Image (cartoon, rainbow, N blue to C red; front, side, top):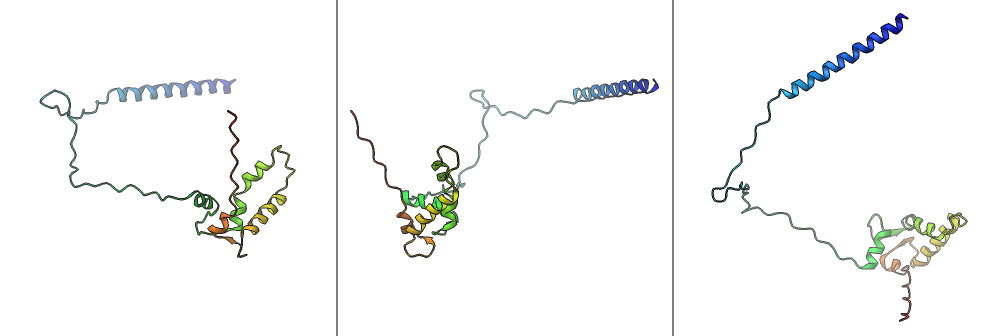
Length: 156
């Protein structure tokens, strides 16, 4: 019984100390003086506040960056050439083909294995690598460009 009474007394004591502490903080904040307002300069002619004027006579900002114009084939080449050394390694070619694998597996049952897909991609790489140095130059890579789609005839 004494433990229950002692627990109740401790709880009431903690609640009252917390309440007095909370009220004391509110009183201190209420008694603080307000911040000093900034002086406002008023123009003489129309009574509106004037804006500050900056001296920008000799200042010059940085030149805007220049964008290099890349052809469609160069943009396609750089999607594969991750380290920008103008050569596509076999690993770079294979690493960017995971989305194509997911597109091939239309029913989502993963019957098309990654090994089968990697063999097809490696064969495509080997077919484009004309000099056999296991790297594609921009001209060799251009041979892997997808064939343009035929536009459907207009049925007007």
